[in-house]
Figure 1 (cartoon, rainbow, N blue to C red):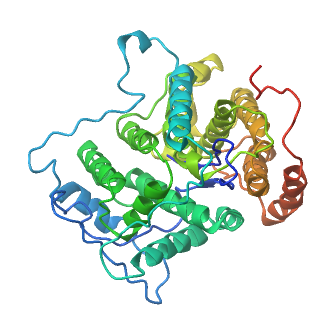
Figure 2 (figure 1 turned 30 degrees about the vertical axis):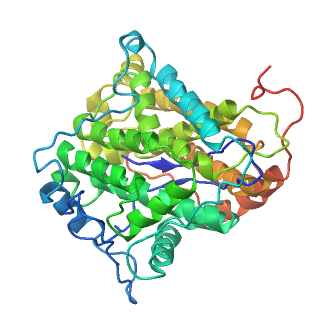
Length: 438
């Protein structure tokens, strides 16, 4: 699995700014060395662990210690309490059972937009809140954000540069969200993924709840606790991302695109909803909040579909096929063809259709980029253009995504930046558009 982090936006409040949020968090060296992360009794006041950085490089054995402890730590679950997993897309009323995944996801988008508008209430600056009181030495919270900054700079270089265009408070918030998403993804894609169980993910969700009641366990949790205390961020998208991790534990095939779409929402679209309160729509934009949310969601789906198409061969070697089974059959392809990894005319025909679909989601996402606040547009456009080029590279490789990995060269990345800048200076449309409510 590969999670795509993306850009999103928030209602028309001048105080909000935004940036691109696009990076695959699956590859590369692993992060963090915080042992026994689930060993704390939730009824005991938090004592935040300080991670000593020293002069060593960030690349350590990542979540090895964390994942071991996630299986053996003394959480509330181990003490006999029951934890109920309630995802907004898992537990649905009886009359929603026949809704498509797109309908369910868009229902979540609408609810999140309405919730944020109620929470903000007025156009007051949402940064004017009491400082988060963190147990421990003075300056520990600054150290926590600095750690998040270093992680982003090390593992998401292009994304990190984009965050520097944001206001200090918002860039720190995005760093904290990014780090939590990466840690969550590594639970099922990290070195200890084979040892992760649904119970371990339940404990991770319990720990998430502690973050939202300002009971962080370690330094990185503390940064996110401070972020959610300063911005009206809802917990549900975080829970839904964890549900995507659960899906990866129990599911390695997708019958149709409806199933795949839901998965893409869980592991990529959720990031947009998490980040909504940290971003901003240009004050002069006439787009509705819901419509720009939907454009952000489309970019998340596009990113994840691109990851899936790029990684077909790699995923097949892990026994996974993230492709609609019914569409494979319609093209005359079987699982055996995927595992054989041969580029045939049938495969080319299938891939062309999949790339067309991904590009349609990118096109839908473009409708919302122009509506962003001015500080957000350039990094978002850069992220979108660069990631979409991966589809071009798959075509250039003659659709061989079995043994050749599509990647965008450094020269092409550099050339994309001026194009992104020129697109970013185009102001929001003042004319009726598909994003504007009639």
